[in-house]
Image (cartoon, rainbow, N blue to C red; front, side):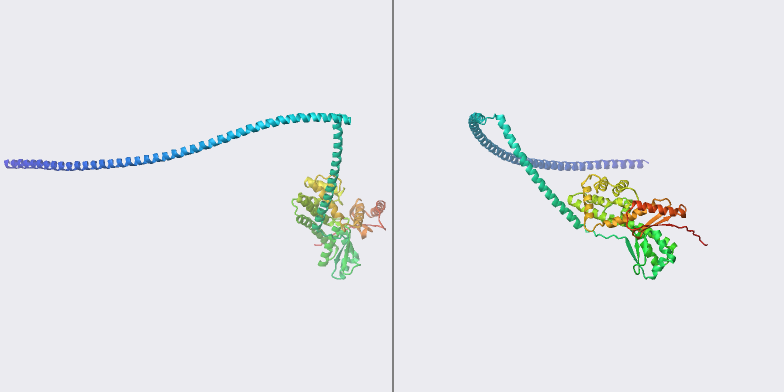
Length: 514
C-alpha cells in the first residue's frame, strides 16, 4: 500500500516536471515565433514607407509637370488674347477714323445742300414771280380769267379723251366680237367633227322575209282570220301581196311595228299559226320589246359614261329609240346633243359629265308626250324634278327651246348643241313628222269615246280600226259611234282623200275539255 502510494507520488512528480518542461519549451518557441513576426512586420512597414515616399515623389513630379504645362498653356492663351485685343483695337481705330472722315464729308454735303436749297428757294421765288407776271399778261391778252381758261382747257381735253375712249372701246368690241365668233365657230366645227354620229333614216314600214310564198297563205289563214288577229293585236297593217317572199308591216308607231315584226318572225319559225298562238306570241314579243327598250336606255347611258340616272329615266330613254321628231330618231338625237355638249364643255373648261347628262335628258319629255298633256319641255321638267335630277339639268331641259332663261353656261351649250343636231343637213324631214302626227290624232279621236278598247290608224291613215268592248257597246251603238267619229274627224282634221272608220266588236267564248 505504501509502495503504491509512493509510486503514485513519484508518477505525479514526474508528470508535473514534464508539464513544467513542456511549458518552458512552448514559451521559448512562442518567443522565437513572435520575434520573427515582429521582424517581418518591421520589414513590411519599412517597404511600405519607402514605396509611399517613392509614390509621393512621383506624384509631386507629375503635379509640377502638369502645373508647368498649364502655366505654358495659359501664357500662350494670354498672348493670343492680347494679340486679338490689339487687332480689335487697331480695327476700331480704323473705323473711328473712317467714321470721322464720313462725318466730315456729311457736314460738307449738308453745307453744300444748304447753299443749294437756299439758291433753289430764291429761284422758285423768281419763277413764281415770272409765272404770276405771265398769267397776268395772258389774262390781259386773252381777256379770260385764270379759272375761265382752266375750264376751257379742261372741256377741250375732256372732249378729246371721250372721243379717243369711244374709238378704243369700239375697236376692242369689234375685235372681241370677231375673235369670239371665230373661236365659237372653231369650237362648234371641232365638236361636230369629233361627234361622228350616223343618221338613220326613219321609215313607217318594216319588211319580214318569208321562206317561201306558201307561208303567205298560212299567215293569212282561213278567211283571213290569222292576219286579222295579228293586225288587231299589234295595230299594224300586214301587206302580203306586193313583195314576193316578203311581208310588209306598215304602221307609224315604231314600237307596234317592232312587236309585230318579232311576233311574225317567231310564228314563221314555229310554224304554228292560229289566233290563240298569235295572241301568245304577240304577248311574248311585247315583253321582249320592253326588255329591249330597257337595254337601249342602259346602253346609251353606258356609252356616254353617265352614272346615277334613275332607272325609270333610263327606261324612258330606251323608249325614245322608237320615237321620231321630224324623221330624226329621238334617242340618237339626244345622244348626239349629249356628245356635242360634252365636247363644247371640254373646250370651255366646264363640267363635261354634267353637260352630257343635261344633253341626254333635254328631250326626255318626248318619251311620254303622246300619252300625257303638255309639251315635251314641260313634261321633261316634271320628269327631271320627279326623279331628283340636279337643278342645272332641269334648267337645261326647260331652257333648250328658249322658254326659260338659262341659268348656266351648260344650259346655253345644250341649246346650241340641240340646234346643231337638228339643223345639220339630212337630220330631219318634216313630212314624216306631219304624217305621224296626223295618224296619232286619228287614234286620239277614236280613243276619246266611251267603250273603245284600242284603236289603230292603218293604210297610211286612210283607215282607222277601232276595237270596242262588247259589254259596253252593242251593235246599234256601233253605227252611231262610227258616224260620230267620222264627223269629228271631218271637223277637226285636214287630210287628203277619204278616211274609213272601221269599228270591230268581237265576242269570244273559251272552254277547256279535260
